[in-house]
Image (cartoon, rainbow, N blue to C red; front, side, top):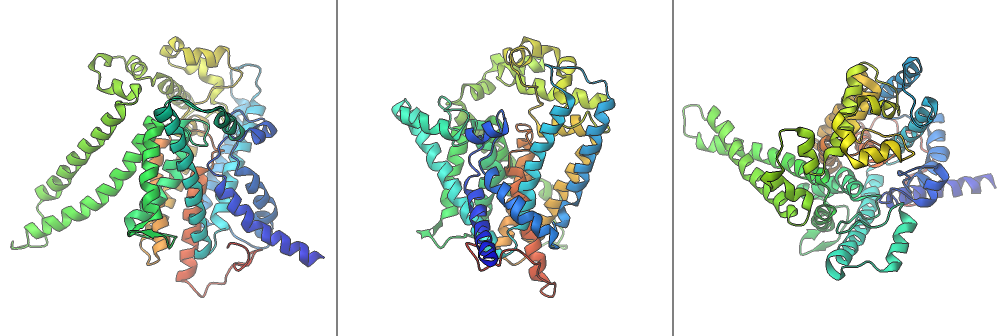
Length: 503
């Protein structure tokens, strides 16, 4: 009886992992939000995550399983967060809407626990190349679902011009919000969240697979892989979300790849042009600078053309090209571009950081200081006044970078950046190997980190799983590569043998 129960439990773990990956597109499941008393973030994938964390990961650790060494800076960051939050009780924190400091910190640590759990499970469960391959296949399936539903939304807005009632009902079953006029949001809470999940998980994997000409499927259509198709369609969906930060992040990721290829091409061109010189291996400084500069100008013009094309459909982007919107007041100019609210939130966060530069004000406590630290221009904005006087929620910085600085200080921000740098090096390590699958994940990890530079100015919640999940896969791939490069190292004892289930 006990053995049968253990087999059933073992068989449930691969199914729970598959459910976790397939449910990643849903960011705000109403039933889960109600149970968690969550206002916006309630990822459906947290349900199978809980099963894996409690019944697989904890026994895995108790039986001697190890977490990746790449997580050490993250462990240090968590310690800093605890210390910063503890010392917050000795600060003069202004009262705000009858909300206690303890309740804010508790809620913030709960959301952080969700994110950390995604990372820990994603970095330990895919412990073989086969599991990583299956995971990427599941990611492609969930990404295809996002694309199809987003294209249906686009057809409703730009094709027939209306949304059938049955689709409204369906959307409200999977999201706390409904549809956004003339913008697609997929299964996400809002269009910017759709852009975030595409930029931080799906598009980097598809772009890396396309660049490295790899695929986790045998499917080919005239030599075109499924990842190639998903990349093209995913880029269209990104465009149709009309997320300005999302579009900029995607273009930055593409620019990174272009820069890599152009540097290599410029080196070859320079060597060819100087082949007959007395020192054929020495490329003149002018060529080393001039050739990449020419490429940069060409691609910058192309990026500008893309943004201009998007401005024909988005009035907010159209204002970028309207000289009458220009103002010497940065906040007024941002308001003309329908961007002032975000700038105000960021500014408040940095002002808090200025006053508490070392450890910040503790996790979740930045909102208490908004009334004192918010730029004066913010009081002229309707959204800000509504948030301050009518909304029951405590405001936030709307930016991961601003939040980390304000709530954990320079020490916490430094550990976060160290962790990202360590993962960047792990990605380079993966790319140096001979395994196409692992090298693809290494390049995808680099693209995630590049995109995060911009996406970090749009999202500040720790509970959204995409950063944690993507970086968890990079950590898992790094462990797999280390194990395969050192076959003499003993294989870790895992509760579920590789041959069981889908793994």
